[in-house]
Image (cartoon, rainbow, N blue to C red; front, side, top):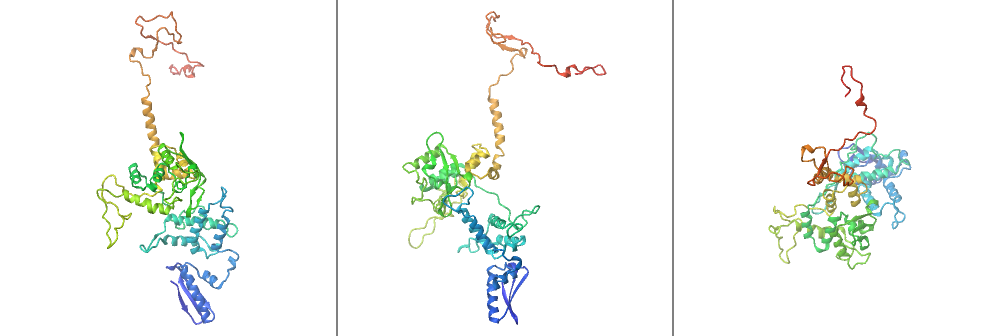
Length: 505
């Protein structure tokens, strides 16, 4: 990538900016041959560490500590990132204020910044970062690869949503330097500019998997006893996995006519128990009688602060172990057919045969065999869809049940499910209206417009013995007296005649 050129009086480092077909960069070092060679060698390592994404002036400043007067006193981005993170660290992590950032969220900020921002832009001064710099940085991120392992040395490309999250954090960090060091935020979109001016990938919409009743029942039947009740409650409440894993008997009410779950805490990264995801995530979730019965059975004999769904060791579950050791094998078992099982694994020269791997499933088309691999989070998507399609819940009701920060999130993800709900409600309303037994018109056309009254009852509804009775005791038709309209007559009835002699009506 970078190479050295030795001249009579200097040694210079040469490379192309960006490591590809960018402009040529040359950084010369003068002085004694040995000293110039040492400086040039350090500069070459610096360029290769940045994969060519560093300019000549930046190399000279790093190696020779040359300060540009235009950037004097302006901190480096990596130093400003530390200042920004320190300013957002809560003073008392145990007693968070409503405006404090949760420690797990702050740790996520640090991970993204130190992984995707500081290695590429951390050596630059804040005033050296402009729109072109950010555009080059985004282009590099879009070609970066992650999850390199022995069995997959190439890894996979970083997701578009990860690139957008890194850009959002850079926008927040640079925005905090305005107006102290920057006049405007170079990561902000100017008025009238296109959304993708710096090459950000388009945001992919959320694609949840809706599990039909037979599918989640099939998975429930394949679940081991350690997670069977957990899956049953997840699919019928829509709770997040981190919320249900730390439920205690004090957080549920299973007696009475209104059983409920009170979400007051959640499992965070690295096994830390903290506040729920957002303010609206602290909520009360009403549960069905079946779920209440499962919770009552599991709460029996527990103390108020014990876990309702503990791990086999009696502690808080590790999400990684729960997924890899219990959930994924249960899904694989639901994808295997009893009549057409997958091929048995080969047996070694000694010892028992190994177990089937999670990717060794049946390939037949028999009915009742699972054909998809859901995530644990798809239980939440399934429950929300059932609340809309079956429960006919309104968007605000679904938002409160799921704990979304705003109803806009609910509508963005599930708005398509409400398309036919209004029509179905109108059809149901018309059917109910037809089912009501309303009085129809008289059967005899001669009696049209005549009221039917009982014998011996006047038009005012008062019984009178002197009224004439029908010999057969039948119903006497009485022609009602026409009512006169109250108030002044309509003006149209007294319009003057027209010139041709016709009336005004």
